Length: 487
Image (tube, rainbow, N blue to C red; front, top):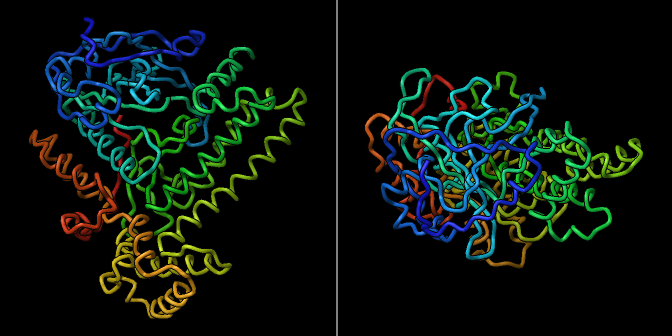
């Protein structure tokens, strides 16, 4: 494995200074013919990297793991996770963390390769990834960022020049992902099997990295739990407000930073139906759209269990403290969601009946088979004739109530339009558009479709005429859309 020139790398590897029980030092597995497929130039520059140098053959070598950036300390992280409710010991089975890039703005960002080969956590897998799912994560994660939703981001996708055996021989690829960190609820679940002092080191590390204001507090571990509750309630409310369905909300896919992580069987809802499930492996609907808020609380309960010894020396007291804090999640989530929904229909102040007005709209959307995103887009643009809502007799009554509610505000129509425009995306990564882009890339090595889609998704609140084509719904199908984890 060769060392590369710097190209702006500025690593400080704090995670590697934790006890080695938390990771395996390992370098990526070399591949035959690296080829850079896509580079996120704006992200690279914000990280302090030389995008021009990285957009090269040498860059491809870095992004597949053949060449290790100067200062990197490659490792695979250990963690556990409740997968569909069952606890399993896990870890980075096909990922390697290069290290933490210190950016010009003073932030710290994990640089991780996904699909970089086997580790001791691979559990029989080949440690590889295929081009389609890696491009899919690139598209969706960057769309989420543009929507203003906390998320890991995608720096690059590079082909390996090797085929990977899945349902067929598929082109292999590696995704380079950035994150505030890859600390998960599952990281703490793994730590629960370690000596108490190592568990404390992890908790102190999470506080120092993500919540430094808590370091001097006497109850810093309880405060850590409180802050993670707030971030997760806010995050999941943001998911619900744009119709995003994660698909696999296992505890190893829930970050301490409050970022969305792991874009496997995720998708955005078209027709509004709270019971929507896309994932082919979620046969019972555990992670359906309507269940995401409750699953968030369930995952937080698992996080609390790992911190109990730090809340209080008496377990029964610690449990009571955890339960009290956990009860705040529902109220927080509801407040974030309700305020977000108010903005989506232009409500700037608060009235007691706002919730019922919103719930009535959602009920009519479900009854009429209305598209989630386009309904709010039509309300924003005053083009309700373009929605399915007109098929429901009650809609005219709801519309009248809504207009009366808007009239009770002091703000002008222009103010209402602006807040609705900022709250309702004109475009999302429509499932058929994503599949169209992936098919062109994987089957024909045509990346122009991916690039056009990314350009449209980069400013989802523009409401420009160029976005109209990408707001169109797919042709009707007798089969439900299904997504796969991409492993």
